[in-house]
Length: 324
Image (cartoon, rainbow, N blue to C red; front, side, top):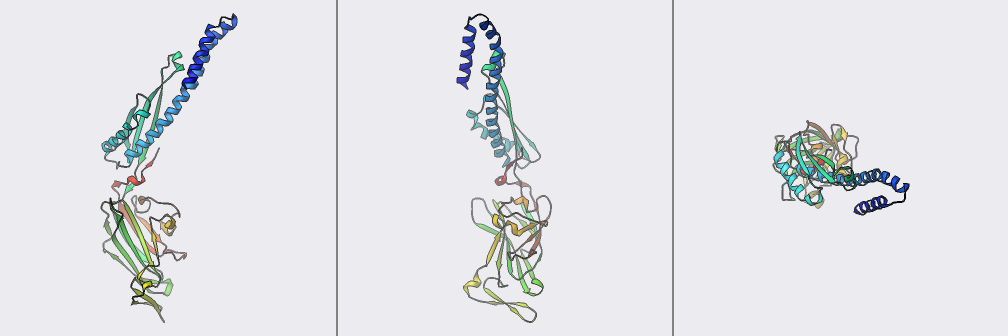
């Protein structure tokens, strides 16, 4: 930009110094407005590039504050965003002012600055105002859930676990289990369902990850047992065994595996395979949800049914996203 400015100034000076009769007079009359027009183009182009850079910084600052903002701690989120901006002070135009506000659970950052002009100073325009704004929100994070198994069916033994990963750990802690034990293979399989603990309300505590896991054993019985069908009523009989094959599950489904998300149905809608869904998308923060889970048999209907609702008073910085 400085080379362009210097070139235009040099040409303007040479034109004014030209004494070639009428040409010099006409040139002198036209040079000033032409220089202003050129200056507007150059200076506004530079201001536009600075505004784009300022927008990138505003986006990043909003994400920084938004990942800890829960709708009540605006001062804490503001401090985080302002500390972030301090690290970019050398990269921003001069005279930048910042304002942090909240709209519900959306944390907003507004940046205003002025960019010095070069050629536009000929017209007494010394600076161009620029502004950028961004908003970010961290989805609601369940603090406890009410998990109510309603129905299960099928030929296969299933164990569903509600698990969390605690901060600073990679270990998975099981908070509740639901077991489906088929008792008959008639009518596409029927059986009993048991939840431990018996209460459906689960305090999740402090965690970084919330997971549902379904483990499936295809011989009708839990690990350590082998199962067989008994005629004539097609009842299931489980017998203790030391066979290695009986000590493991045949397959496992998890809600943190994007490639298995199409096994889960939320309020009658099949989730999309290959997509990592944030927690609030399927744990009932907004309202109680009805879920159905296909155990992998490929049948036309699902096999494990439950409802879930949650108290979501916190926010989850792992999924913070821009809203504007």
